[in-house]
Image (cartoon, rainbow, N blue to C red; front, side, top):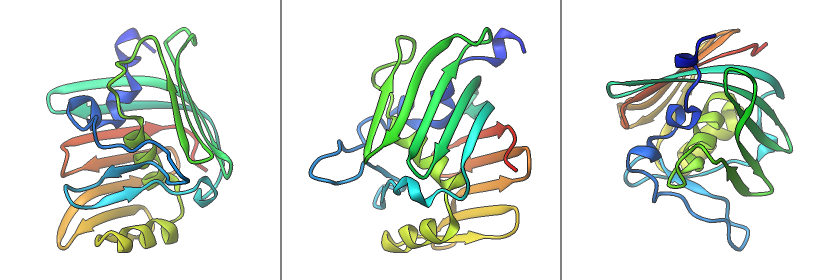
Length: 190
């Protein structure tokens, strides 16, 4: 794996780096963090027990935002207790940590910008790996719809596709049509 393929994971997931940084709430009074999925639809992050199945292993992340392409290696451990992401460089050295536990997001890194909104990363992860019934209910609660077929998920605002996710055993591709970014995750998702 070359150095160009190992860069900023958070740029892969987060349009927050490009201007959505102000769209997350702090956890206060038992309220979970949220993102603005559309300009008028606020998605509250789901509880970790809604994960489809536990994940514990490396993932290669590739993303495109506008003209920019990014790649990063991360170790993801996610189960019904929370989400942990360890960001690694090509030598396996730690570059940062992201976690979501007990309704709070924790993000530390000396490499990534402090303006980064990690709630978008958690939300996109949930759209890919949390159970369809929970996502569908959350979408109905905010006036959106959710569809799932064998290998594809879609979040829609009326007839407009906001997010499309294509999944197979080793690759997950998320396309955010509204915000204009794409990323793929390569790993063992069996």
